[in-house]
Image 1 (cartoon, rainbow, N blue to C red):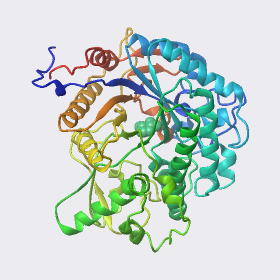
Image 2 (cartoon, rainbow, N blue to C red):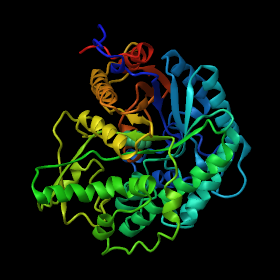
Image 3 (tube, rainbow, N blue to C red):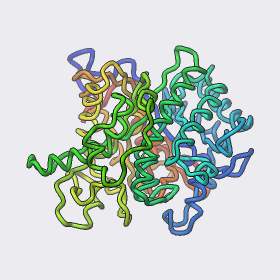
Length: 475
Ligand code: IFM
């Protein structure tokens, strides 16, 4: 296949980092080794009925033992960057006190191996594995957890700061707050809308405090940012009531984070929409100066858009919000005002519609909202029911189409002015997909969980070619 013609130099992906992403609990396994204690996801996945098939992260992809092989795999694919997360309970098992050296050593060795293969590491400090002891003490709804996180960030920066230049504080704090404490489909499985709002604020505070500890510990060249999963939320029609539904979900999905992080404020409409639940008295004087730290980059995780209207009375509408059909809502104060609708487009195995225009819209929107802040697509990808490896190959044309469409959208956003510096495919490996266990495969590399054999799918080979040439094939 020939490359798309490029009439201007800016058509391509100038200076781009081509990477893949994973997260500790989803791939590492070894949950009881070298001093690691349980996180909220260990507790949750070991609670009957919480995760599909009773799956747990106990073994996952056994990456804790196979990391050299996994780095070699990345090198063979020609990846230029790898985004991984540090397991907080491996480094600081109770969430307080000194670090466990063996935990830090694991990540130092991983980083050194990446660097030896010319792969740029991006570290995420929190991808959902809160030490269980901190949850027992109240978890994210409590302010203390934000201070614990800042201490942990300093410990990791002290160990890896001389060799890692890209640091993300949190991954998708929306999921931590609203799926973890609102709908309860994620750990720790609590279903309290006020706790969810409190958690959101303390995650914002944690980002701010951790950014400060990172900057104090890291060399000036290091970049500190955060990875959000903003919702590309669209109104069903242009009717005023549908536009108001869009405004409500935009506030609860997006502005509850971008307000404090980018502008140092919670928007009045968010406070008004949730006033029957809380007076937000947990936001203390000075907090919003802490949450608004300079960002060296903003990570955008994108999978699918949402379509909303004024409430229709269809009680099953939340099956279209992309976050499962739990009895409890992840949308505090919005349920009686908003209905979700299926967005157009082919569905992935998650039942998420495929629509790359949502990614382009978000990249342009955040370019406007955070002028001068470089963007990375820190996650993008799709689960499909890929067949088993057959004669050493797994064909996944649906994933290639998905990636092609979304990379074309990234390129369009760049041409229209977005400063996008890189793309991290989710995910390098098939892995533990949270409440769906191992039933959903997001990997560009197939994992046979019985044997731990890794087989790059056709999408991995396709992506390797794109990364090597820096250009998208036509078609
Ligand atoms: O697997 C997750 C990841 O951990 C966070 N972002 C979305 C992915 C797919 O659901």
